Length: 115
Image 1: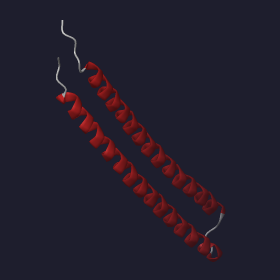
Image 2: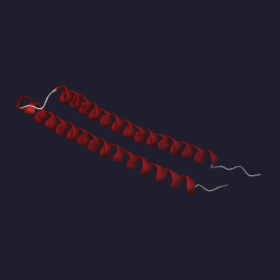
Image 3: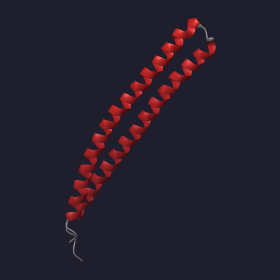
Image 4: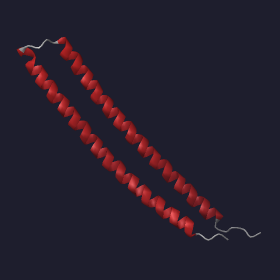
C-alpha cells in the first residue's frame, strides 16, 4: 500500500480550519454576551427609574424628574445602540477575515493530491 505523502499537510490544514472555526464561535459568543449585558444595562436603568416614578406622585414639582428620566432613557438607548453597532461592525470584520482565511485553507487542502 502506498503512503499518502500529503496526509500531514491535510491534517495540519484541517487543524488550522478547526482553530478558525473555534475563533468564529468565540466571536459569536462574545457578541451574544455583549448584547445580553447591554440589554441588562437598559433593563436596570428602566427598573431604577420605574421604582423612582412609583415613589413620586404626579405633581408639577416632579414634572422635571419625569422629563429628565425620559431623556436619560433616550441617552442610554442611543448609547447601547451605538455600542452594539460598533461592536457588530468590528466582530463582522473579524468574522469576514476569518471566513476568507478558512476558505483559503479549505481550497488549499482540497488541492492536495491523494497519493
